Length: 394
Image (cartoon, rainbow, N blue to C red; front, top):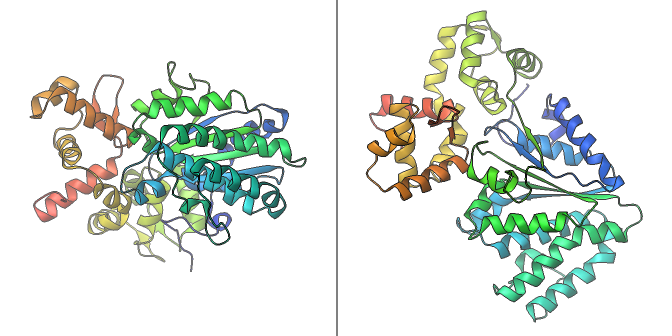
């Protein structure tokens, strides 16, 4: 029986589909690391579009001459109960580099002692590293310590490359990078990274996240006045076309079939976003031809399963964020003046929460000056829940 996963599978190669163009573009621009040309990347796209699976596939298939590291900021965000600090992020960078080295025992033996000695000097305390990870180290939060630690960690990838004859580059992916906006001074953190990339010729960073292209954090990292000043290689991952969606379902589903009208309705519901395609196909009847009526009924009855990622996001939002989203559901797109008339709080508060929703990839700002919900699946989920239950989800 075939299955279309809605969570990250262990075997990326088995379930990975398409994206050959994106992989080729990224690999071409990473290959020059060996020549001392360190491109830096910003990868964006809707939730569920496949950014994480694309980048895990990219790292998995890198040649041995490149070391790779994958940093998921949502893990730190969760561990710290929604409160990120610069120290914790830098510490996670160090832990991830350690894990990368641990995969190559020859490199790890040569660098392990140096790393631990440095941490001991920074913390002014001895630790037993035989049974614990660097992640467990209680690094003090003091300015002098952070300065030393950040300098050491940011310089470490290039030093590793310089010290190893067969290693030609280090590729570091920072996933859910939009969470860096919750730092006390995110702009300074981006400038910290930028300052070291200017002096390192064999280290590439790939920042990725579900964030609106008009979000403040995009300008903060890669706008003309941002840390990287528009120099990052920016790639937006697009949804599948109708043709790609049809081919994908034919090849990967458990014999899901549609008549023409049904497929048009299916594509309108999923908009070619792989997570929605997979979750919808998993609840459709197989070995029979689906009609548009079957699609419509299945969509409404199984909306929680199809829009599962939004159930998770909704539970993390504040009351004011939810209030604004519901306002967009009921009023559709609105400009600043229209919004200001609808809410009871100050301009400063409104701006704050609009920025938060934009940085989370939930709303976008259009060319005609209006804010709107970026993913219609979220809007449809809320509309269906209100109609079926008489109220919006809490």
